[in-house]
Amino acid sequence: MTEPLNWRLRVVHTTGYRYATAVTQSYNEARLTPRSDDRQNLMVARLETVPTARVNRYTDYWGTEVNTFDLHTPHTELKVTAASVVETAAETVPAEIATWAEVRSAEAVDRHAEFLEWTTYVPKHRELSAVARSLRKGRTPDETVLAVSKWVHDTLKYQRGTTGVHSSAVDAWQAREGVCQDYAHLTLTLLRAVGIPSRYVSGYLHTKPNAAVGETVVGESHAWIEAWTGSWWGFDPTNDIPIGHRHVWVATGRDYADVSPLKGIYSGGAATAIEVTVNMTRLA
Image 1 (spheres, rainbow, N blue to C red):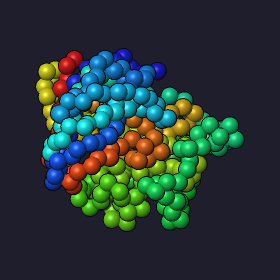
Image 2: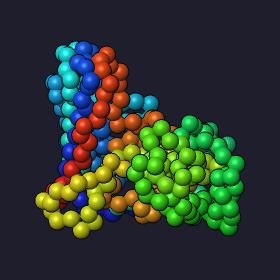
Image 3: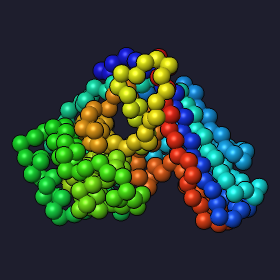
Image 4: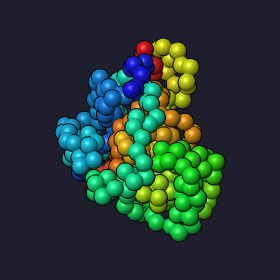
């Protein structure tokens, strides 16, 4: 049973681009809207663009709200601002406990097959599979999730610049460094190697556990994982902590490719990101 909703957060995520030559037309998708579940309640959300564009919405295959917009006015800069207010609570870890037989049952494998697949970001790797099997020994599925997450946390050093947006779990493991995206992908590689359905979660992390009401802090775009061990539950391997009221989730998928916050196609010069900020304010 989850705790009562105990934080209310305003999230403002701003991304700006500058183009080498004027963009004459573009099609864009934004996955920046938090979702609602037993732990989190979305109260209000909006997305604004400069230049102004009409925003349409749909829910994709993975259950993520996608905001789409076209621009046909020539422009050399683009600014996208997503603002939302959510209520969050800490999560009980895990809500239900399954045996290995239940996790590996034909019914469970069929239902969660997509979250057992290997991908470009989460590839099959012999040595990592051996690590996963060693971490599984003597542990239940939920205990294995925690052991794997701790191993990833202890193995990787948090370091920006070593890996990039296209780096795989193996790239991060070989470098022994990475960012939250890499921690999540490496954890998924290990969990899938022992047959635990697991998925990538994108969202935000409030960076101050004891923030005062009304206080605004610089937040982080963040990534963590969810595993199915009788029910879905999340854990943050980057920080080696359970999912709590400082976590705001936006999207889930097999890996980063399914939840990319902003992507699109355009006609114009090369793009350079000039502004990426996340500000989070505790409202209650």
